[in-house]
Amino acid sequence: MLLLRVWIWVKIQTLMLVEGDRSQTQKFRILICRGGVGFLDKKRRSEEEEEETDLNKRSFFTHFLAMVEANGHHNDFDPSAPPPFKIAEIRAAIPKHCWVKNPWRSLSYVLRDVIVVIALIVAAIHFDSWFFWPLYWILQGTMFWALFVLGHDCGHGSFSDSPTLNSLVGHILHSSILVPFHGWRISHRTHHQNHGHVEKDESWVPLTEKIYKSLDSLTRFMRFTVPFPMFVYPIYLWTRSPGKEGSHFNPYSNLFTPSERKEVAISTLCWVIMLSLLLYLSSITSPLLMLKVYGVPYMIFVMWLDFVTYLHHHGYKQKLPWYRGKEWSYLRGGLTTVDRDYGWVNNIHHDIGTHVIHHLFPQMPHYHLVEATQAAKPVLGEYYREPEKSAPIPFHLIKYLILSFRVDHFVSDTGDIVYYQHDPHLYHKTE
Image (cartoon, rainbow, N blue to C red; front, side, top):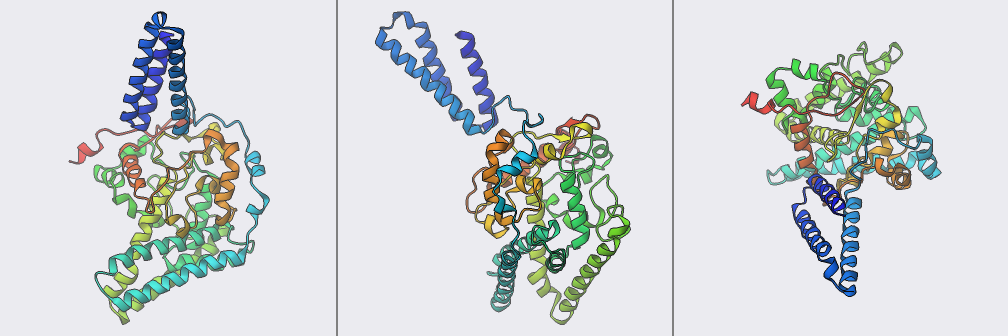
């Protein structure tokens, strides 16, 4: 009995360390101490007192199990273990209508977002007040991000069953925010096909220890110190990540096959046309006005993109695995992604926070992802990580972003299942 109590004590301390709930720990200490006294005095108690002690014990275990369930994962759960289900079982659990693409519904979201973008521009120019501009920048930057998500659906083919419509709408939306549609689409496809793979993944891929140590101190500091990583997307489009070569604008980049070069060239041309239009508008109005109307919202959009895409693959309270070689599979890689709740922004950016099902089934329309996720959760079990509930504005995610950048620096050069490691000297070297 005493050994059992010691085991429970250790389990509670481990659970509370993960949760960071010191007040709850203290409550359990009191419960255990009371239970211990009851155990030592058991022979001297009357039958009525013994019954009361048993009730207290049962209450203690009820609270303990409830806390384990609230934590979402038992302490012995290994997220790197091969799942006991197949991707076909997940697919079978999702209602059939969730796979249906409605182009008119998709276009209605485009119309909604475009109307909001135009209305914000008209309001900003009309008021032209430094009291209004900061609000405009935040709202318009968020709407640029919403446009990107709809273009993202076009890239996956989840916008409609028509490749022509997907390409047309995708080019209009992505070119308007200076994203080369086909160049990005192809590299993003690579990301989905290799999610969770150390070498082959494309988006926020972890640095190996060798590559990490090859970076100079300033580069390391900038890469892992918020807010600097939140502005890297334009750089990524031109040069990709450290350790990788190629550009999303160059048809002859090793990102693309010869058959894809024409598409990439068309997207790059659309990007050049949009940039030229912005420069022309700057010349006939003023560079300052274009900076306020377009430039600052564009940077807010970039911050949204980097913020969201990073947290869908990093910053969970439990370390998640990355794979190589025979340990990697499409299913295991997809299960390392993380759902996030963005409060009011969920609807604005088209439920992109439902990321696990999106990664496993990228051809599913965004407006079915929430329902599909609920249907799949019984199959996923502990491999699904319930997102922390957000306030109207998702400020709670900032702490996970900052913490992750401070502790998730590189992975081992060897091993088929690896986890992020921490460089304790990173910030000391640059001070």
